Length: 131
Image (tube, rainbow, N blue to C red; front, side, top):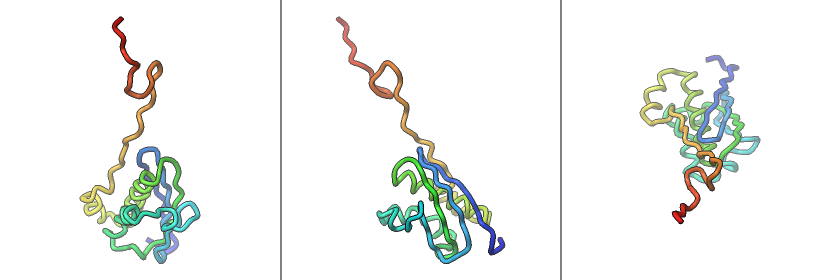
């Protein structure tokens, strides 16, 4: 990989989408124009996001710019984690085995089920009256 090469990948989880740009750098991460630790306040969520970089031993090797939309904080964190994992595969295909073992290359497709017409929710029915 050349030093000027930018890697762009996308990750999704539930209804969240995270698009990232990965550049060689010092480890700075910007999310929607804000600092990484300001956007994802919870330490457990931060560790969850940085897990792919820890496996690849490159936490301070790349600068990451993230644009994320939809869902909540946990959904966006999962989308970002998948995008980082996919970007690391573009850098070196040898990362596939350890990332796969950790389950970081699997997209989480679970989404809220839509409300159906003629009933109060997705699965709930109106109360049945026999008489």
